Image (cartoon, rainbow, N blue to C red; front, side, top):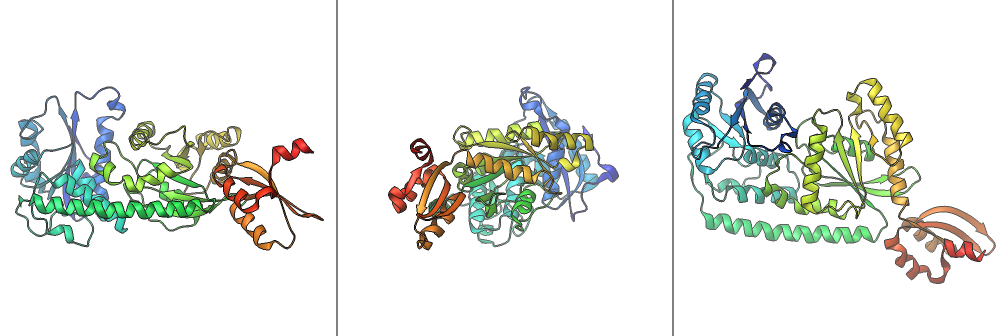
Length: 449
């Protein structure tokens, strides 16, 4: 089945590519939450994200995998004819290929072949900016390439993005020296462990300041980075392409009543995320495991929004994110793309059901105030209220209380400055250690009075 875009092309890139989605007929009904056309469209978008010019896209129904080429001989010949006519440099196969299958297809079609994992890894290699992100992607790449025929391993030391799947020096394929690959993997794992320890120290440092962490998660291109930028006035790279954000970013965010939280932007998820990437990015996604609240950002205007939701929840479950341990709240983004009546209905629901899914447009800013209020309610529900009376001369103690707690009320009395404080349970011991008997649980105060 061939699918043509208007004008016969999807992107005016410089390198031509053919995209082939392999549709297994044996997929279960649950796996078929996405149609073959939708999965092909996502594959095209992934290809465009790496700057390729898609000249043809098609679906290959598959009843039984062929050991040598995955797809049947008839489909191999059909694509061979297309390649002869269109002369693409690459053929993207939206499926997992063995090294032998990849080699045989390249010989048959006279073009470089990338499977889904290789394509995603190439995108990740170009998008990663921080040292941690590059280490994680390189580890995933080496794990994938370990048993494959590759050109050489000299690209491991290159500084530019990507991993050479798309071409570059040394076009003839040779067997990689497994010992060198193994040594590099071991070194990367040690470096990532060091990064993990550093991030752990940073988390411990944040715990010394009562700023809760709110993590953004969601399907790739759901608008997480745009939402992050809008809320925090940051300048994280946000573009309408898949996997625009790969490196974790954290910024402070002030809620309506002045409470401060730390907002964390994370890598987007995708259906059939390569297992190597889930493992390699575990250090980055630990921010989600440590978060006080997880905001699941959904592209509510996308026709596959429900299927994307299922994919995200599956990855979160694999990571060990326990919904009972912390709130997991849906943020229905991109309402600006919905019909006017639907958009207004969702915004009205924000007010009627303030603790339910919150509808927003990260682009226009609609619904963001409801989101901030919802975060404040969720964080406030876990707090306990205390009364603290300080001497008028205790300026340092007063400043500390304001910095580490949420002051609800303040009254200047003859006996001193009386504060009514909301304190997160994990910081109560620190307040007790500093103020001792001066800090009194509000319920006890009311019973006495």
